[in-house]
Image 1 (tube, rainbow, N blue to C red):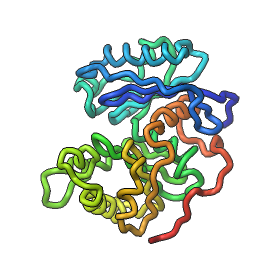
Image 2 (tube, rainbow, N blue to C red):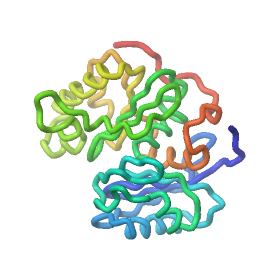
Image 3 (cartoon, helix red, strand yellow):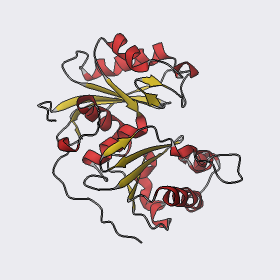
Amino acid sequence: MTTKTTRAVGVDIGGTGIKGALVDLAHGDLLSDRVKVATPPGAQPDDVLAAVRVVLERLGVTDADVPLGVAFPAIVRRGRTMSAANVSEKWIGFEAEKFFEDGLGREIHFANDADVAGVAERRYGAARGVDGLVILTTLGTGIGTAMLYDGVLIPNSELGHLQRAGKKKDFEAVAAYSAMERDQLTFAEWAKRLQAYYEHLQFLFSPDLFVVGGGVSKHADQFLPLLRLDTPIVPAVHRNNAGIIGAAALAVAGEIDTELLPEATPLVEHATR
């Protein structure tokens, strides 16, 4: 499948902020300044829709000529949100894609926020050209995950919620970046928790590469070198813009299509530590 479309809009809805930008699909670069507005208190559907309208108006792309992708912090199945992370519980079981399409008067592509970050890193970032299984994790308020096998997305993996043997709290509760802030941990102390988490993922899935995203990835040099894994682990290239870029990419393709990937050689070597 090929397309003549060279740009699209990506909107990334989060629990605290809603971000959007115009994206160059050939290179995964932002063609506009990133627009960000606060997520409305309570994150009710109507209020979130109104905030998305504001983002599109500020970007000057309210018409349907430019494809639009929207990322959302929830399990997304056939356009319906099946969970609610840091947003209103009204989103659970909600026909979100249709709601946005009706409210914006245009077609969109709607997907889980961690999944679209994985798309961005596969197409334009740290997972570009990497065969086999790649697991991207976003470390923030929670732990989002995306799994890609030979460039094909396995959606809604939610591996942050893996249970710890004999413990009441899952890995997200103790290893997310929010847990580091809450418990006032140093990077070295937090890395011990991350070590247990990534070791568990490694044992269960034997991935070829871990990619670590989220805002904290800009500090990757302070914690990734402390991890001792058999799987290569690298920071995401696009960090907090990955949701915008991946949503824009999916607005055109609708799924990861390796024929649309730029010619590339792997950015990481498959070498064990």
